[in-house]
Length: 634
Image (cartoon, rainbow, N blue to C red; front, side):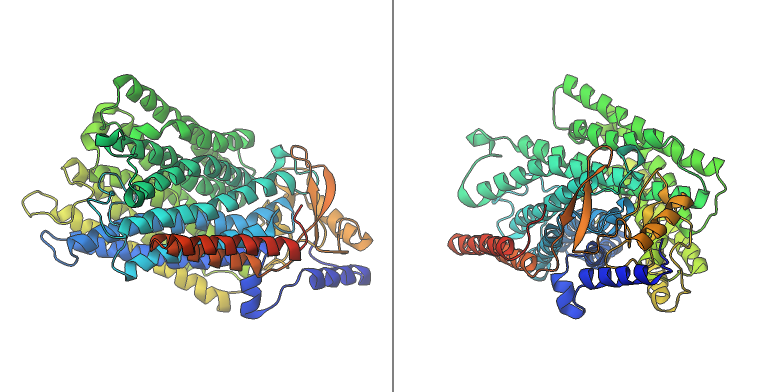
């Protein structure tokens, strides 16, 4: 499909290049609506935030490496602890998995030429960047959020935190939520409406099922967090009493609304890892995924059941016993779809002819940490155990085995797996395998001892400790592990940076992957596919005759769509083509809207409400001009 052999085919490809090409240089990146460019913008931005979150973690681990250490002051430690959590969850894992991987890969995997709403896609990135800069401005103003990433009241109320620290947190996450909501809506419409002809729901890549589950979860989970943050800001700054017991409020309202978002958030974080694993395992096992329909259903069920588990974070708050029993049962039930996937992954590898290259090794590490973290998670479903270990480092250990070991390892494996597709070059395999072992050992050594020290009574918000509690050796080993982990991560990025310029040419499909992104050139052209591909199975790139038929269609001019900036839309279930959609090109207005929105939140932070209203009006005006000046997205 990627090779044209006649003059008419070459002319069609050249016409597509002229239609879809965007300006080069800085202007091109500032005005881009190309999903691949936006994916790369997300990638490098989230990578920068990942570095910031990692530095925060190393500083905290250094502070805790020995008893009575004085590297950080108590207030600085609280700020670093909070910003580390906020960064890794809201500014790295979710936007890396959805914004970077999802943006770059979903249109390629479903045979589309872009996302359904390209300008909205650009807006979601610029809002994300602005929200991250807004929150990190607090660090440089020595007023970073300091009440933990879950920001419990009354600790977060005005009388206990009178500065702007918590306002940065609340307004920053409302700001960030706008970006996430826009991105989620875009993914839902793209996955339902822009699939290639023949890619019915049962033939859609498992990665896309994961992205769909994440997007639906975000749409339903974010409103509870947003209203919680609005309540907090109203109480802090305008005298409301949502969380004030003396005025009829309830501090538990914060926890209910937060965890109604926060536990689905755990699955929002882990589901992209499932999707990456289901892409890598078939390729390097050289066989289709076992129980494909069950795995797809399990990904959706994990998201659905996750909404019924939130109060298992609140077993120590005095809720009625019958309520605790219900949520304990729900906590155990969510294990079922996760176990289906673990069995499918391992059986696929066992029945295939696995080639243990770096991407598959990282997926192996992911499965190990996911199972270990899942086992400790089941322990929390036991109400007495949960109550005994609440707010201890045992919780921190479980959480990081899931959030780092299970969520980040597939991201690292995915970086290696799709690196040839994005750059057209191969990474260094030996260095990649070494980086895996450093990262795996560092992760285990950092987080496993936390289980033990948690059972010994170390609380998760402790700043320092005396030498008589028996925690010394465990904390030192955790700090050593953190630096080993850092070495492994630095080797990964050094390998990819070196290979970007010196790596061997990869060709379009170096791993013989099964999904459609491997059916086009590496890196993909601006229009993704010269011919809109047709699909007859869940692994269309392995249907060699279909790909040859696509090449023949290019020669005949069928499904080329070289008369304009177009992509086909299809029916929701069966992917029968039903219309041709005119797609908008590059635009400065998404960036303009994001700048006005950013200034709006700055004015809210400084309580210049009239000026905030002015910037809200300017943002709306920019949206109006955006719609007046450019074609409407269908």
